[in-house]
Length: 469
Image (cartoon, rainbow, N blue to C red; front, side):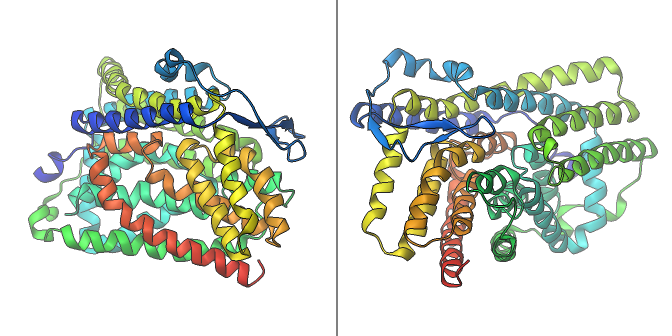
């Protein structure tokens, strides 16, 4: 199994990938600062809802306020963002990734991940495209049913390594995992972080109107699988050139460690899946995943025969290796911080809303879709965008006779798909860095899918409007 050994997943961020990502994000930071110099400040009034969340008060309207941000504050924005409102979620993401980095490195060091990949490859190499279809469905279901996205980052290097072992390339592996979970997240079947929050704000029963989102899930799954399948067919290697699969030898100690790892991870996944029905768990899914990997990693590495001191050393090395990702997260998050501090985020929103005044009904729903799509560049958080946009777009849509349910679908579409495309999304940047794929290569691969998906989802929205959804 030499080929598999040479393709072990690691959490060391590739230098080239890291530099390209930093350059792209810094360029976006500069563009954002320039916008603060030319776009006037403005603000919508906000009030607290029944749950204590700040939402836009449509009664108070839009008012002009002082804009701009001091240059020094822009320079320090990647640090200052840690003290901004809502920074708790940002800090949680960073802590989550540090834990994952440490555990993943320990699993890699003891050889368990390499062993599990070799065993899986030896079993399924003859039906690899069937396995691809199942993996894509699994990741899409995680995104659609429980709103998993960032939580799947530690699984991306594993799937990429599996794709390499099966004769495909890294882009195929990212497509099977990150692209799939992002597409499922956007379909929003029972996504608590987009559809759930947005429907509550629109005074709709949670997860009501599910039929159109289920139909969308089916069509989007077909698009994702077809896109990844066609690319894999172009780059695939003959199975005979990949591995001597028949010569795989089982290891009793590694088998026990595999059982322990899968059992703990399986229990964690069940807990995450149950969050769709147990609302109190929805705020803790990332913590659950972090604890799940921590317990699974520690127990499995010790069962595999790794010494406790080696485990501790590997864990620390893994935490250090993930630190470049922290810088990328802070820089990407500073873009929204800059716009909010300069009071131009609401101004941009107000300008787009005004475009709807003289537009035909069918184009309004597409404008809402594009508005959320544009705002997702600056605000990756689905729930944060819901509190910002739903109180505005639902009343506007009602004026044109567009249902709140269709607005929710447009919101879910606009929020999710670009998470795997925009360089301001931390999970995307980190995933690319972990498997040493630069953003330019991913852009070249992904833009065709994004275009096809934009056409497909726009048609689904127009279909919903036509049938009176």
